[in-house]
Image (cartoon, rainbow, N blue to C red; front, side, top):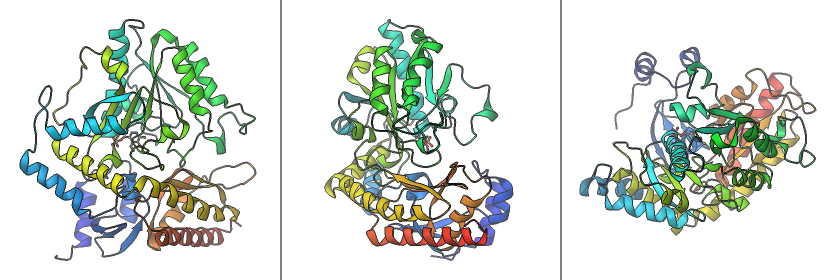
Length: 449
Ligand SMILES: Cc1ncc(COP(=O)(O)O)c(C=O)c1O
């Protein structure tokens, strides 16, 4: 393969590529990362440098790692046999098989699926399904409002964006879609009520009831939450959080949407994260790991009760349930089942979390937390007040790790790790070692100890 011209690629990217969320100034100063190949858990950039990718490709999608011929071949074979079948009543057999497989895997009554191409679209469908459920059922015909949470991330399209509060993406597009509001979230290391668990009584969950009453229960269609929130790193909620939320939703006939776009299909060491707390959502959205990033595919799965209440689901997109994506998902799921990768994510994740916890003694590490194959190091400028760094300390540590050959994710106050489920213990050990080295070096250079 001809060696890519890194300077030309960088120049072309700066001139011709509109970077999502990356600041132009930073792209000019540090350049984008342009990758050309990958294998297993390693990815190589255009300059020929290889990295241990501890983020499953930045967005956490590549859950089975790179270069998996089985998934690539499944897509190829499907595209040759039938690459596209249309929409409405036109379906490819492979798409039907995927919908049935999701029904088999999904918790409880979640058994009827519509497909999209992105997590954002999956959440748009979830909101539409919730509103149409109330409309057709007739008990709350004016229920159009959606309640979300502070710091939530649910996507970039206008409805999903209105439910989003993270990454500063919402405000510049406002006024957005009407009817969305947000309640405080279980970000316990920095509690929105400035309290400590368990003395807090999980006030953030109970606040949902006051908010529903304030907004008017008859106008509220659904409450949406990520089972584990990504903002500021892997926010694992208190164990009773979702049972409180579920009970409040039931009491006010508000549907509960679990956004499992990151957590679904194994990331937390269970097929779906809500299984950890034994709570069933009415609607579940998934994406990313469903195809291990080999094909853009996302899903909205509703309970049988919701599906039965809809005489028609008023929604259509050209590429929903694309056969190539369905083939990728079925093959990904088959590999996860055959190789018992959910158990591996759980066991290796616990090992990794224990190892990372040794870094909590470092002066700028506030908390290490995680669930399954999703962990983070939350940094603080002051262990007493738990204040996050106001400067670029976290970014600098991420960059230092990158220079040392390990990719982690900058996630607000934290650095996040979401490696492929196939990562080895030796690779996890390497990540802990490099993270420790980078943190110690930056701490020393900045006189933070
Ligand atoms: C929890 C969650 N929901 C929804 C989305 C939106 O997914 P997409 O970027 O595929 O539209 C994301 C994306 O990162 C996400 O993390």
